[in-house]
Image 1 (tube, rainbow, N blue to C red):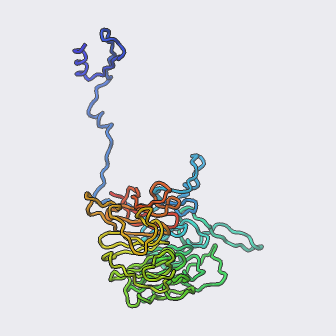
Image 2 (image 1 turned 120 degrees about the vertical axis):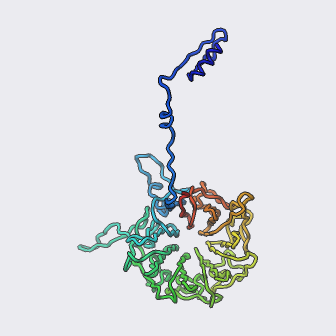
Image 3 (image 1 turned 45 degrees about the horizontal axis):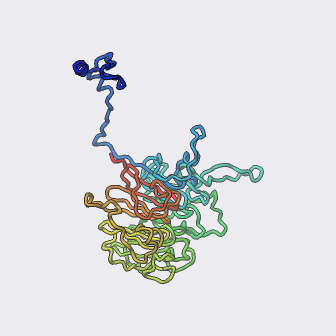
Length: 468
């Protein structure tokens, strides 16, 4: 029997034995293939691998996560799936979801809405989605309601569930590029290279840079205010929105502000609303500013000599190192000297971040600061260990290169394009796969190299590039 088995194996046939048979009555069944396998047959079944050429361009991707029902993610099928598929509605997206839209260069998250912009010189340059109750993402005709005979009143959609082109009054759209976008609580700023800044949405406190009109209705408003570059000493290169105020940084380093100022948000030393962009003074007088950040009522600025200035609300101790009051009405230099050379600042709702040239992240303020559940309040910056951002003996060059803040959430991007988030995880906006709050930086899995991120109140937008 053994000799027969050896011969069968040599002939490349399959031997099937009955394991329940007795050794002295061994029964077996022999199956012989009906055809002889050839090299061609083997190659046909092998997977085909396609290699990308060296001249192929990397593709940009947009991922979103957080609350879906406002439309801020721009994905309609999450809260309203097709009934034929019998998929239950998804009210929050806990991990990054690919938003299909091409050629996006700038992203911004507001309070329940998002703005996406392209650098291309096309007719359509800016898209918006989410809450539009104050026309903060433009006028989008929805229906006509009869008021009197022969008259109609046009209304706009109050929620845009998918990215929709925002109509802007360009003089020459073919020669104009969008170079920055910013979102506040109910207003938006769109910065262009040749036609100035377009402001839209709620202007109750002058945050759109125009005169305040008593009793103005912002719902279904088609008003888009243009602030020309000539209004400033040099062209504006960066726009930032706080909750209800706006900041404008010029090419030569001057900083201007307008809007709500009850907590000193504008940094002009007054508590009344400021309807027109006005230059900040105080400790900023004669200082060249290179970066500015704000999301709520606290603002931070960084100078070309790497000094940090702060103003606005200090209700949660953001500016407690320079004032015992809950407000700082004028820009004040912050005495931070233990952090070495600072290269970036980020101001959130209740806490702030710093990034130094070594790639270390420092945090202070109130909330989930990223150093565990035992640290909720810090007057002076505390360093978050670099190991929490992937640094190890196997990755000695790993460091953070970009920081961002939302209302209660934080994000950091490393030099290898990895994204880490922590803080208040409202509606899953951190993108970590769950809705729990995150007390330490946690890596967000996107499968792409992250190049930019914007954090909102309850959602987040991530811009990345394909690895190949």
